[in-house]
Image: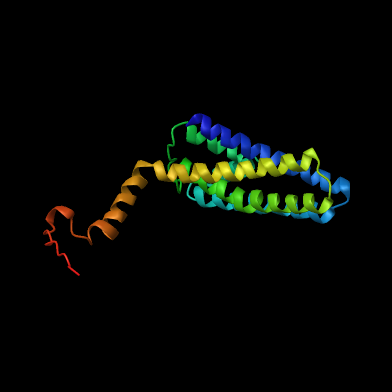
Length: 196
């Protein structure tokens, strides 16, 4: 579990680094519109993460909100969330959700606010440039890896969570098995053959 969480944080931080590198490259190439769009994607991601922090800590006081907001602003939120999840997944008093759920919200904000739009924009810029270079390809590959890894881990965490597994069984029971007659109580139907 610890490796998986820390690896995800590392990929997330690497994705943010390569996106900043892409912004610098866009400004250097004179593609200011692409650079500003990438900055906007990062800003949207950070704003969404700040909303998560506000909702998560609204009952914990302004000092906690300020501390958590600084973590978001420093772009270290994925690493801090990873440490909290790896430490045992204990929900703080008056917190809205446990660290794993907060990590999920943060990763979703990062994926939909920054990783997906940024990778699409960078792919568009790469295809439009007509030349293939290592920097843009690396940034796109890291963004795609971050998207794939985050979405896979989120799905796996929800699927393998014992509480969620019990909920899924009860949903299946309610929708499927309770409506059907169990095989053991069915009466055997006589076999009818038709002759031509």
